[in-house]
Image (cartoon, rainbow, N blue to C red):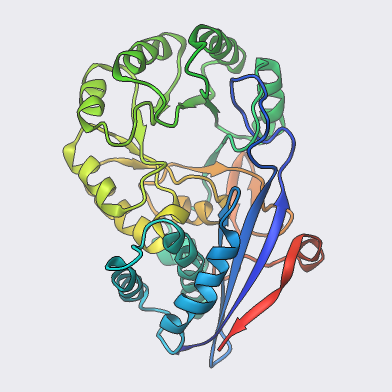
Length: 374
C-alpha cells in the first residue's frame, strides 16, 4: 500500500461570540474565525485518510502552500504505515534550513493525522483501538477558546449546556496581570457555584512571575481549584521547580511547547505531574504518542490541547490521557466524529477517526477549491 494522491482544502470557520471562557473585560477580538486546512490522502488500492490542522489568525495560506509544494512530494509513493519514519524524514529535511517547528510542524500535522486515519481504516478499526483501546468512552472538560467575559455568570452560562450533558470540569483563563484581586473574586464565585464535584482548571499562558504564581497557587488550593496551567514562562525551568515544590495543587505545562524534547525534559525532571501537548504545534499524532509513552513510564498525566475530534481517540486509546479538552469549533463539519453518551464522549465506531466531512456545511466556509497533488 502506497500513497498515490494528496488533496488539500481550506475552510474559514466563524467562532461563536461567547466561545472563550476568560476572566477579563472584553477587548477587541484578536480573531473571529479559525482557519482549517484539510488533507485528503488516497492510496492506489482505494483506502483514504483525512487529516486537519488549524490556525487562529494568519498563516493558513502558507500552511496550505507548504503542504502542496514541499510536503506532498515527500509523502507520495510512501507506505502510510511508516508514520515514525516519515515524521523523522520530514523533520530532518527542514531541520538544517527553515527548521521544523512553527508553520512546517503545523502543516505536517494535517498529513500525520491523515496517515493515522488511513492506518486505522486499513486495519478496519477506530483509531482509539489501534492506539490500544484503553477505554470505550472518556470524560471531558469545557475548554476556553475565543473571547473574554468579565462576569462569572456569563462564564457559567457559556459552559452550562455541556456541564448539563456531563462535562466533568471547566477550564478558565486568567488573561489580565494587572487586576488579580478582581479575577480572584470571580474565580471564587465560579468555584462556589460549580461546587466541589466539578473539576476546575485555571490557565495563565505564562503570564506570571514566581512570587505571583506561588501566591495564586495557595489561593487556588483554598478555594478548590484542581489545576494551575502554564503559570510561568516556558523557559523558567528553575521557577517551575521551586513552584512545584511549594504549591499545594498540581501544576501543568506544555500548551506552547513545540518539540517532544521539551516534554521529555520536564517529565524526567520529575516536578511536573501534568503536561498539555498541542497536536498541531508538535506536528501530529506521531510525536504526541511518543510523549505519552514516556509520560506513562513516569506516571505523568497527558491532557492534549483542544481538537476533540482527535483527542477523543487519544483519551480512549492511551491510558495516560484522562479526559478530552472539548471545544465545539468543528462540530458542524464533522457531526459524527464524536458524541456525548451518559456524560462521556464516545468516538465514532467507524474505522479511522470517523471524520466524515459534512459537505453542505463545508461549502459555506470554503475559501477556495480543493488542490490536488499527484
